[in-house]
Amino acid sequence: MAMIALGLAAPGLARAHALAKSPGFALNRRRIDAALRQMVAAGRATGASALIWQRGAERYFGAVGDADREAKRPMQRDTLVQIFSMTKPVTGVALMQLWEQGKFGLDDPLAWYLPAFGAVKVIGGTGADGKPVLREPSRPIVIRDIMRHTAGFSYGMRDTAADVMFRQMDPLALTNSLDEMGDRLARVPLLFDPGTEWSYSTGVDVQALLVEHLTGDPFEQHVQRTILRPLGMHDTGWTQPPERLARFAASYVKQADGALTRLPDEQTRALNFGPRRLTMGGAGLASTLDDYMRFARMLLGRGTLEGVRILAPPTVLLMSTDQLDPRISRRFFLPEKGAVGFGLDFAVRTGQPGNAQENRGTVGEFFWDGAETTLFWVDPANDLAVVFFVQVMPFDGSLHHDIRAAVYGPDYVGGGG
Image (tube, rainbow, N blue to C red):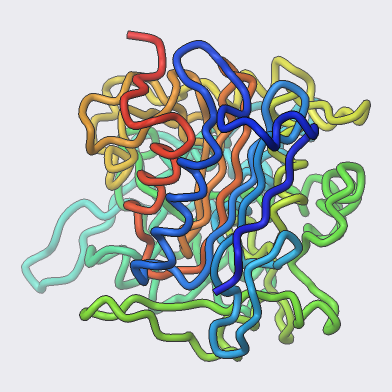
């Protein structure tokens, strides 16, 4: 097992357990160290790392365990991990840059720009023959819907008729182009009328398709040019050069007995090192702690990092404000993340933690995570950003509970009311 490595912003901080104080809590190095160690020692992860930025300086870095257990390669600061759905906020920022340029309106019908989605239908029940009955949606899908997961698209995650058809159409196959992805998805019925429910979906992949159509540029190249390179995120991308394989973390699946088994390398590396045609908006980026922290710091800085402006402050505020009408009461798994709503490509904390089992956090923070249990959050009230990496499937929310408790302390209730 690798030893924990610590990086602190100033020599005096290395001698202090409380790294930085903020109303209601103080960062505590020993508490965070212990949480990372426990995750690995208990076999919940092979390796874990965390990076914390607060009040203009790095306040904590820690890494423990292995990025590749079989190769005995330790989790390190420059380890590359598959961040899966932490790609989604990057895609959302790319689209909102175009919104700032007046390329579209959030309440414009999606079909104005992507006509295939003007013909979508909604599943309205089951006929006598056992087949789904399709009907017209009560209103068109608007662009706001694809950014807040209220369009009605499937993600193939459930057992509804729409999910079955989604899996048959396989829009996210890596052999599809983004245009082919959109054509296939538009032929899958919606789960519900747009704007009536929240359901995690392929909406962010449609955002990527929309970026391509609005700009005329390949999505991957556009994001590199407008976000990743300007922010200095040099290790982050969908396509990774072969020499970076030596820094790429292996992925592990928790079995019924709790043991972690390695996913085949050809499966974990397909998105970044293998041939593909599809650049997903909802997944696919590989990144490092430092790179993704630069993205998080840009958001914490209200759209600007080190003099480079990516978004205007009102746009970041719009994205990080709950966009869900209270009448949208059906929200699939979102309540599992606590007292949260959803903005534009971020979950947004709207209330204090209600009990000890709920994740610690601050009212007004915004965040998202990834399928292999990666996590980041931005806490404007405490001028704080955190990036947390593990590579464990299926998604393990208990690891998020524990890293948040380590950062804030178990009794923190996060302001608000």
